Image (cartoon, rainbow, N blue to C red; front, side, top):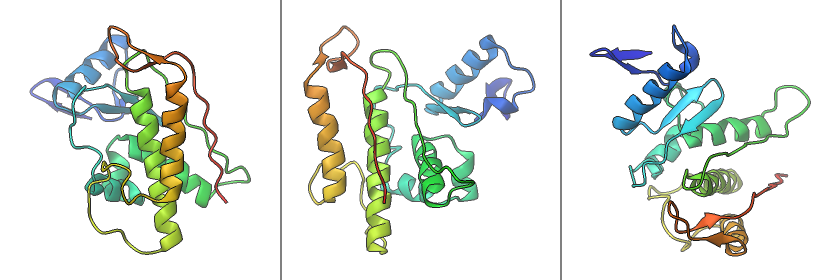
Length: 187
């Protein structure tokens, strides 16, 4: 836990000496003001939509969260959640290696974007594992040009699902009118 100039800034709120709803909200707000949009509560990731690109999804960040590095494990990020699930699939602890990630929030909270980021992470990890060669440094946020067929299929499937039930709301131009359930099978 970090407290600079009496301002609460805790990456994992489980480590807070005192935990109340008010302190949790204050911590998340303080972190958000510093462009730290992710905060953990143990294995739960709280994300606050900044409604702007903060440069958090580049190749640099993918590499940081690609392996269990000390630096990557400490900093909350959607890629850290993806990495933990992917690692458990590849190197399961115990007999059951199935993984679930629940993404929840109100309209405009960033659920669809978080889903896309998770899908991109899994597709990129799968592609790299299949190729067993490092990817040349580039921004992961590029459009569909040059992406693997796995990634294309995952991301296009999400786009097709969205086309069946989205509408414009006061908070979001592309708000889902339904829940989504996505199963991804690795072999």
